[in-house]
Length: 619
Image 1: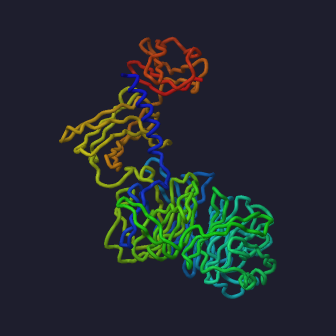
Image 2: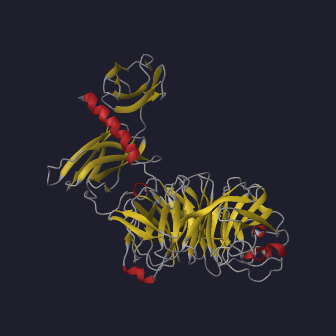
């Protein structure tokens, strides 16, 4: 019976790791519907306010209105520490950069510094709409603006892409340009919506948000240097093929005349975004006026001038949307705007117009085999803008632009059980509930805030919790988190549903971390909904017995800080629960395991002062 039980627990553990390690794209679609005064997400996800219009900035001033593109730039590749750049699609325009960091204990994003970028050295900026995060860790912000007057330098005032160093919050001084700072003159002048940069670090695709907008390609002369290069406009030669037509972009006058040079080549009614799919390498772009997303293959992004496989990827039709209430056929509508791919090749689409949804088009979608879901519904008057992700794709950053002031009549509970009113432009971070907020899933809890306790006993921790109502509960899962580790399951209990009143349950943590250990209880009900208890903490002195190495081959070595006594005993169990080794280790500095078959074992060390237990790999 014990063998079966341990085998069952092993299989269950593997199942749990699959079940609870979900991707941010894992959710059931929202039901289609009109906007109201609230921001709607799937019940599996939650959000945190980072900053809203009018909030003070650390360097002076306040966050401007009309928040658009958000770009997360990781510091040394980190998914918990970086810079967040926020565009302001206003007149004058602006870019604000936040220094942000995830508090891994509270699972809260903190803003440690904020500053508006100074554009005075490049004649100011106008209507900063979308942009990109470059592979080399800078921000490009694009001016969706008409050119304006010619400046003393010979360049028009507006309608450019601008590269910014997020660490210094300054416009970058490009090679061979003006003294002090430059816009990216050689990428051309137009109503720039966005750019995206190929992994070759030289090719840039650009969209023009104009009723007769062109699609452009810039090929830099040198990697990670956009100060010079060749500029092209796309011209379709059939329904599925096209050619990149070379434009002139050497002198200020040539750079200013990008739009007129592209006259006669294929245009679209408002190109809103261009992105590259990380899975298939194709170029995707959204056209707001058409209500469609197109894609194609650039045969040779560096030196080629031919594109093939041009087609409509999404839009222009209705799709079956399956929500918790059933499946309905729902029109894609108009206004597909900002795009963002995640690491699985899912395409996230912000809609400006129609219902103002956040759509997700799952990888593998085709027009004949659609895979479309609704992730978010923005509040009255608002549109979603500028989705960007952390490198681990646990966190999504985005803005909500121009919501109605009347939305203050209602509120939505955030990841920290704080009511939030969506009546101002706001920048959010969104994730699965398990990754944001100290309480995990928000909402009414069956477990009271005082129901959990934890107490140190020698070298282990006793945890207990009281539940008032368990009639819908399927599991109670105790989770532990260290100061530098994620939440991890340490025990799982099936509730006693025969108890109609309060009941108390207990568990042990036999391998707590040295230092602070945080504990919470996760309840999963029969519908799969999850709620959390409050969080309690226990401090553990550093462990006095250390075993190494793991994995082991011939011997497991024991290092003691003088606490072993004659009663200290070590056992090794296989996964069936069978004891394969048992001995006292009072005078022993090593355990020979060469006779054991390769596999995973459980090591248990016991004495009057401690209990230590850990899985061990023997090769």
